Amino acid sequence: MALGQDYVRTIIKRSLLLIFIGCLIAFIVFRDSSYVLGILFGGLINILSFKIIEISTKKIVNMPENRARTYATINYFIRFIIYGIVLVIASKADYIDFISTIIALFTVKIVIVSDSVYDTFKIKRMNKD
Image (tube, rainbow, N blue to C red; front, side, top):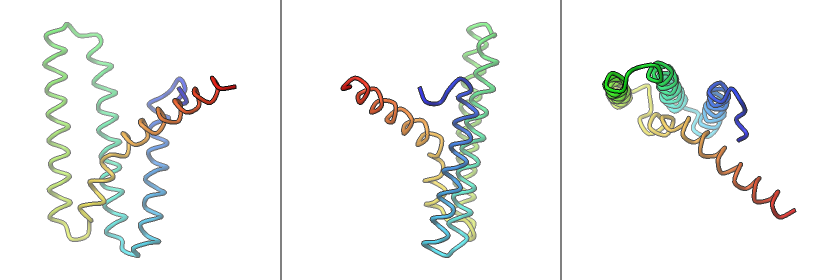
């Protein structure tokens, strides 16, 4: 896997890079700060959610099964509520573009999937040689 040993930090760095590139492209193409703010808002919330998943997973590993299940469920709903609040804010605020916020909420997922696709093509290419 191209993410390396410290995969969480690598995913966060690549996500921040993707957010920066998205903001740059949005500013160049649209010349409107609402698109940039939408990408920043959605992307940073997505990274925050990913970090919450990391922290809760580390805690869950050392818990008894019943307590771990409850803790995971509560954290899942907390992340859902955070996403809901973000979407409501983005839809109500005139200075944040709603669509760019939604797209940016997939930043971490895009990084993880693109890394997996890259690894798949890399392995296939190595097997041909």
